[in-house]
Image (cartoon, rainbow, N blue to C red; front, side):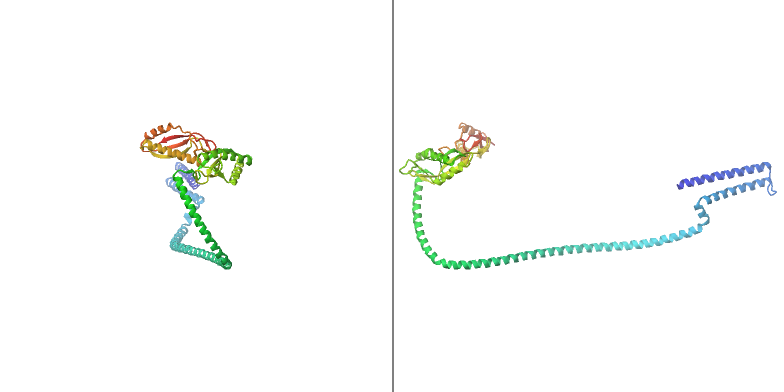
Length: 416
């Protein structure tokens, strides 16, 4: 906006100056042609005077227009001294303000230093406060612990006093019972003598039993399976009890008689507690699935003596899935064929024991039976010997195996 104003002012001055110069020139030419005189002067002098007057008019018109139009020009022409004085005063005020500003900056720097110092002191105070708070918390914790221990001690004292009172009452009762106890002690001494005699008798029987075991006179060892069968569950307990008796007095009794066991004066060899028979029938009656019933020797039984037995019951369920690894062993492939055969038989024995533990039905020989093709055994030995170092021999279920369905179907697998 200021630029447009200045350009307009210059343009107007040019136009005015040009117009005045043109008018003066025309007047001068007219005076020179007509040879006019002014104040009785010669025409030449009159022309000079007109030219001078024209220049004065141009300058006056320029200054007049500038003065009329521009406040700055009026100020420069008529108030310059005031401006200089005001400028000097302003410069003086600026110097005073600069000095004041420097003083305030110095004071601000001092305040910043003081603030930094106060901040540092404040941080130290906060740190001290944290330490004091931590110590106070520890004191409160210790106070709570002491109060807790005090309460516990009071409770312990009360309990001790109560126990003391009970002990005092017990002592009084013991004093009253002292005489009967003394008489009981004498009775117990007599019983101890009888028990020692019984112990001597049992020791003699055990020695005789060990002799019989050594010479093969044992019909059944403790926990040995006599025979097992499958009984359908979910029926009347009385019917199931009769089936158990039929099995007990039939096939199971026949197996025991083969072993040389017998009840004197009878054609039976097995003894069972009637309550056990009732319990087994009740359990099978309450089971919806088939149940594997095992008749098991309760203790070592000699030839010519009866066999006390108990029952083991197993619900019919899948114990091995097809393809499941039943057992495995690490074997040195460098062993001889006979040694490898022993290793295989040991692993098969482990499989048999595992199946029996899981409740699988057994044969009269006390095994679960295995459908292993024995022609695979030599091939397995050859395959093991084809490797070097340690190999893994696995016994794998060839089909799903259930407790009530035998025999156990297996196959052998060798890997390194």
